Length: 464
Image (cartoon, rainbow, N blue to C red; front, side, top):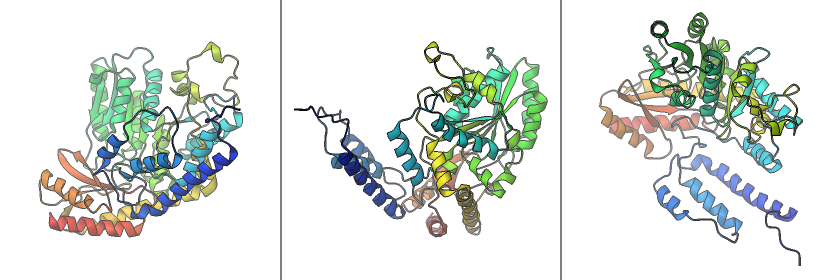
């Protein structure tokens, strides 16, 4: 009797399993508009119920899918139209299909020789990203697991170019609105915490260029070596945008690397308004992007664009004799030579396939709609005398709080907003003040949900 091979399902089993999962996904997407924007009341209990070692003998697929859906249902709903917390990720279905294909085909894109056409598809995406920001020939993009890894590779490259092996006196500059992943990246890159310089921001929460110049000159006088400035193209707090042209001039004058963290805001570059707001970003040495934010793709899809592709490679390359039989990167890039990763999945397909299926225009129109919805929400809330809106939105985040009331009152206000579970907002702290923020990024968010949000926020404000 032939021994069964459980890891090699029959064609019939493959089709049956695929159809079952596809039906579950279809039901999930159909029901998304009615899902609660958050559902964590029983989440810990559900997590505990799933705490178990794997069985010796395999189980029923239906039961496994039920467990997966139970886990996923007791969570925040970042793919839903009412999710305004943090920076959402949309989970575009076309990208999920691409991930299904790429994981089943299991091609390796870290080196080009094993699968040239696979790497070419990913390189098409990388070239498109470079062109989107008017990068020159010789620039290079890589796809990463997210903005944190992109920021890490950017700092590594800046360190390599500007400091070499002598890191002890290298200083780096971030605004008080910068994402913490930049500071974490610098620390992991070997820079002492004491070498971080936090630059103040102006009344619009934009990096103060005068203060930056002063800090750099002071550091040079004290024997330090300024090597990188991190500018925001959409801060995670309020979407504030740093003055790119002025920062680029400082970088040129002081021979400092200019890195732009555009993880949240970068794909507004596709719109006329976004491109105008980001004037000067094309002068950056490197730019971090998150397609899993502004392109609505699944989590785990980030990118880094570097003006000097050779510098990116030099900073990351480490030869290995066991790879000597493979071709050099003359025809296509070996991504493992340009990033910290050797083993990695084929991320490029889940960017390339949605672009080819829907066209670039779809990814221009959707963020343009989000800018319109943000302005609509801002103006509606600004008309309410019970609310204070400290900053006019530059991208798709509306920051607000009660016009009268301390931080504790505003915490209760946020709880009231989130209690109906139709929308989910989050908070931050800016200049020692508690601020509520609504971030409109999910591609499934439209005018009807914003109208509902306005009613919910106004009602919560009147009760507070």
